[in-house]
Image (tube, rainbow, N blue to C red; front, side, top):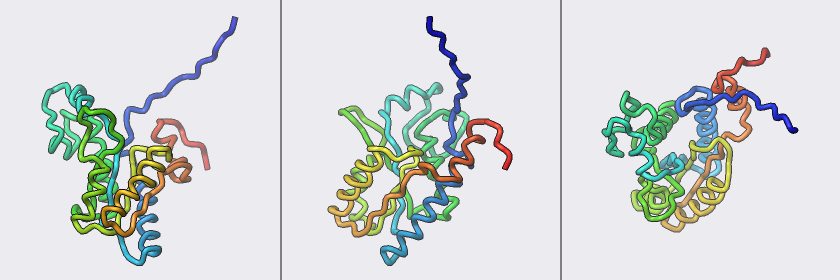
Length: 201
């Protein structure tokens, strides 16, 4: 008979506001903003934090207290919403914007990749990309903090289709910030997120 050796499993509840995640992503975004400015001859008008979406019903089902409004209740992490994905997304965006000293008018949150006819988290990224030029945004930087590694959803949906949507709506410059991938600071910080002892340097 075959005997399998199953390693111990370690589950991470969440790391949406963990310094090991926020710090390297903020530095990557800071570097991308500087690169964008040097390459395009001017700074970004707006930073869009685009998160992977989920159906609204999924968020409502996780609300044990029945207080979720899919609105201002996500403006902070409070006792009623510690497990709310939408609240986590806004907390991540606030943490990144805070580290970069972005003024509130210079950044926003949207949600990508919905399927079917059921309502998903809003605002929808594809709608926002088409609307931003109407609000005077010509130079856009977009980042997807939901993913720590680039994939079809980031490379094709955001960097290709999203770029086309923004530029065809009147935008002039579009810059996609790559995910952390194998960023050294991110990799070095993973043991802390996982609750593992760090190797001596």
